[in-house]
Amino acid sequence: MDPFTQGLLGAAFSQSFASKKKIPLACLSGTLGGLAPDLDILIVSATDPLLGIEFHRHFTHSIWFIPIGGFLVAVALWFIINKLLKINEWKFKTLYIFTTLGYATHAILDACTSYGTRLFWPFSNTRVAWDTIAVIDPIPTLALFIFVVLSYRLLSVKMARLGIVFMIGYLLLGFIQNQRVALAIKEISSLRGHEIESLKLNPTLGNLIVWRAIYRHNGRYFVDGVIAQPFIKPKIISGTSVATIDPEKIYPQLDKYSTQREDIRRFNYFAQGYLFEYQGTISDLRYGTEPHKVQPIWGIKIKPKTPDAHAEYLGFSRPNGRAFGVLWSMLNGSYVTNQEDLK
Image 1 (cartoon, rainbow, N blue to C red):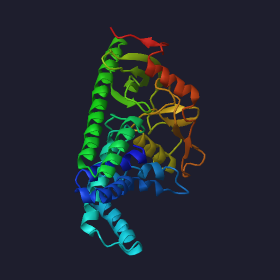
Image 2: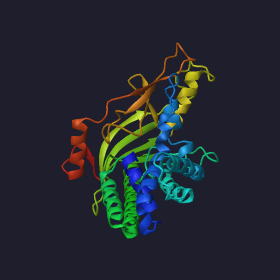
Image 3: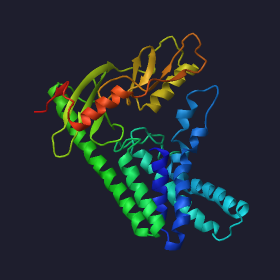
Image 4: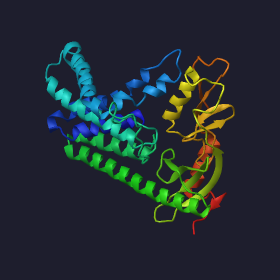
């Protein structure tokens, strides 16, 4: 998720295991531990545009790296506190416990999103994505902020633990919503005479009500929006379909050992296989400007005439005012176009 939420969750988790006296230190240490895994965004290359997305949520997000990551953060914090600020009140062991507790929350929360996290690297390269929460969601962020501040101000472990309980409850709600949306898509695909070969469900920005659903059938991806309001049967917002692509066969003029062929494979792995052609690019279908539309957010440009040069990474238009207007109308129930009712 976003760094602010990650820092807050790390703080809350560390505060949950602190004595009253150590809550301020736990807040600082847990925040830094919760933020630290995303330092992988500094791994970039001037010649390889895909290196950044390849290493984001890589080894720094593995559960096996948690004790190492917590140790590195503790070393940095200990140096600042003891050597620069000349404060010798806290032992390294105490710092290490709190930074590691904060670090431990990061990858688990990221795995709850749809982006994909190498949670079990190096023993597995699977990009884990449980699809239960959006990358940005102000509801849990605001709740965590309130509980962390109360814990800090009141020196209350209970407030921090309530924040953790709220976060777990929100993630469980996301799981329930995911299952409701999955059932709705399976029902509508059956009515269409389709057999689902693979299914991807993404909660849209800032909520658990409106979802982007993508399923594969007979060489095509079908994209729909789903409005899953509480206590009401989900509604399908019919979208469109696009042809799937084979990363080994698209651009047949590229040799299988060429740099750009390998870049297609790398981008396919990043996109969890949900690739399609869009305006001369190979793009990631998992994310779009609107829940039921195919317009992507990012993709790569292949140049077959220079097969051993890296593919160009492209960022397309982000959701604009119209897209947010469509999302809001879906949230408040006023969006009625292209609804496909479930029987």
